[in-house]
Length: 243
Image (tube, rainbow, N blue to C red; front, side):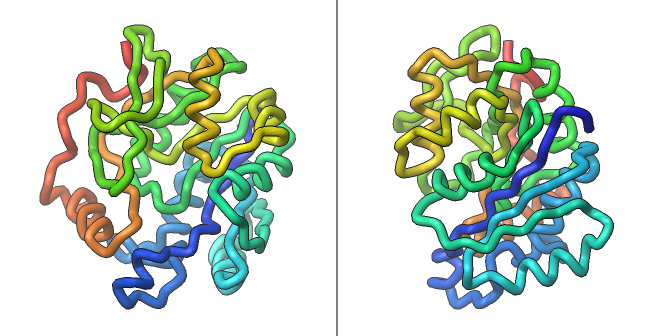
């Protein structure tokens, strides 16, 4: 896909799974029989992204071997680095990107493939200088990042204690925001995104019916129930740009 890189954040420790006794590295935890990292890479491939850069922590080196064997035909750069935060991982990935815009996903942002590709299609219709975030009404996170959105679909604020939509871990990042990230000081990626919105940067939202932040065993069960269709995604005003 012209003018678009892919980047996958997969360097988290998976501490909640470890606390529950799970020993599989988080990127390889299966949902409906398919590891999270495979879900994510397949999303990128289906969206037409030609090259992907992936970051995993040093305890998950085996993920690199698994991915390279599973996807030998995908142009995939794998970085093994234990970072201090999600934002540091994001900075590492953004330093490798070179095209106009970068499609970014956390490895634990599970959603159906058709919803992911719809996000990419709608997000690319925004001006090239806009940052675009996937939003969802499905709150499956212990610490959700709530999004306040104006009538045109522009995000007016991130944070707070409640709301209608939360960020979903899937982003379209323009080149100038990659440059801002290189010099920014933030402890977490959500802090950087909140600062972007507060500074007046054009940040827009695209609504997806259901994106599960797979951080806990119960999140795997929720994602699998959605995949089977045994529970329905929350109703949304629109599955696309807000406004």
